[in-house]
Length: 250
Image 1 (spheres, helix red, strand yellow):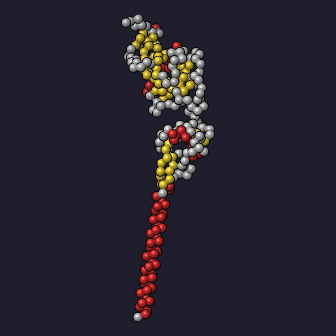
Image 2 (cartoon, one colour):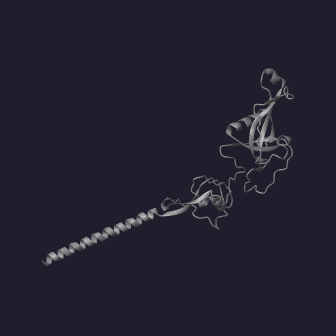
Image 3 (spheres, helix red, strand yellow):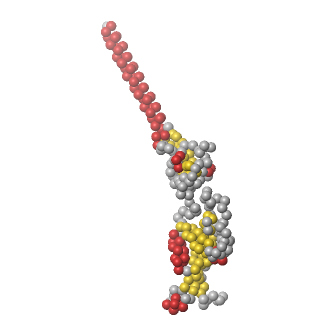
């Protein structure tokens, strides 16, 4: 009888040990699962962060924002905070939209800083214009201009041989993003610089769609260009052709 009691007690003890072991394992598994689900806040670029932008400005403008992700997915060196210690550091190069922002992307001296910002999907083309050809000093970065092209008429062999000229609108609306060395959006290196004084020919840089850029390049190579400053609601007529024979027509 005593042996049976001892056996029962031993069996119960073994059972209790087994239950305890299962509970301990389950608790450890839960802890490991929770650890794997812990999140950490890191900065992610919501828009392109241009080179030369301070970390504080990038945060203030919403160019990069803190985003919570699983701790195990945080890349080494990711930027986790912006404060007084690093807020004045500048982006050394452009940071692409959607990228994790790495702390090492910020420093004191930007490299490859862009002199001008070209709108997405467009091409910057520079053309040399005389003072009258760019409305004196009144064409400035941010202006919208009409560009006229005067060229030797190519209609018929006699017209070309005689040197008869025609003038028409080449581009009816071009955004000026720089005049001389003065850009529309000053970089950190050019901030505070005034526009270069006008004297003789001056480079005017415009932003155009690729197809329009090709037209301007061809016009630069084959004709004489002249610019007009657009007013509000100006409608230039690209189809109007003025020639030697029609110059004085009404």
